[in-house]
Length: 188
Image (cartoon, rainbow, N blue to C red):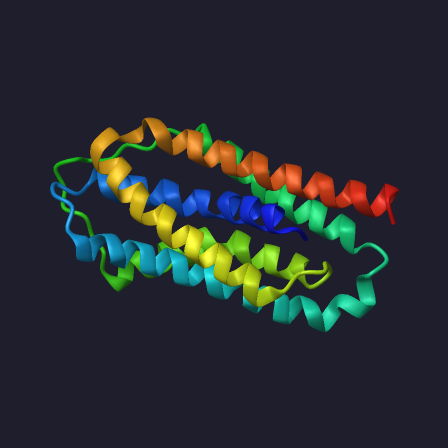
């Protein structure tokens, strides 16, 4: 996997976290630096660790399914991308007057939920020529950065970017899945 592909994939994976960060920014009356880093750290860390976990699990089964691994990668990325595109059309209402909750009981489930797709991608990495540490660090750092900017964007601009971010991220994941499938079917 080339570095530009990895970066595109990282951007695609970070879109769920970006969308949630925008929502968090919507509910902040005033942005505090520590809140930016709390949101970024939760999402960035889980987007970093979940591909590593997925890779570890996928590596255990790689030798049994190498004949059709490209189909698994395609299906996983397409499913995740399709889910993100579907979610981009849902209408979420945020109460701007409520105070944002950044406690572990709120942020932990959000971070896990937004990184399930990174877990699936980590499984697919086990079947590809990917350095898991480079990939995971890239995904984590990009998500951390996007999450911080998401809070700021949400606080300034509101909900109009949330659906566009999810839609774009979903498209990126689907195109990556198609590219991997086409490469394995026609160029191997």
